[in-house]
Image (tube, rainbow, N blue to C red):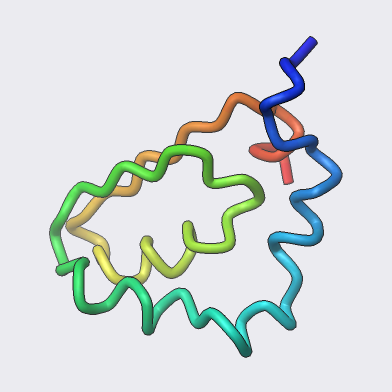
Length: 76
């Protein structure tokens, strides 16, 4: 059983809400820091709000390593 300090899996739906992109555009936030070909570590990706944009920014020669303690978040 996860500890109480871990984000519950059901909250991932709130974090991945498409409306969030209007306030926080992942590509715009990440673009100044990520280059094609990089290997990027994303701790606690939840349901992947930033993950797919990271994948696009690092391109086919890059790599995104996303690690989360909630299996249901990763499954989503």
